[in-house]
Length: 112
Image (cartoon, rainbow, N blue to C red):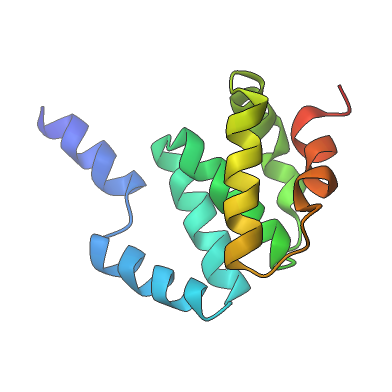
C-alpha cells in the first residue's frame, strides 16, 4: 500500500496548492487554469477535467490541443446535455456569450 501512496503523492498537488490555484483562477489567471487542468487530468477527474478545459479555453490558455484526445474520449461517453450544462456554467461564471457551447462543441466532438 505504501507504493500506491507514493504514486498518489506524485500525482496529486497538495490541497493547499489546489486552493491557491482556485483563488488565482477566480481572479482570471490563465496559468492557474492550465495547472488545475493538468492536475485534474493526472488524477483522473473526468467531468472536472472537461470543466477545467473549458475554463482554460475561455481564458485563452494556449497549447490546449495536447489534451484534446483525452477530453474527447471523456465527452464521447457523456450526454450532450451534460456537456451543455458544464459549458453553460463556465460561460456564466466567465461572462462568455450564450453561444459558448456552440463555439466549443466542435473541439470536444472532433466535428462528429
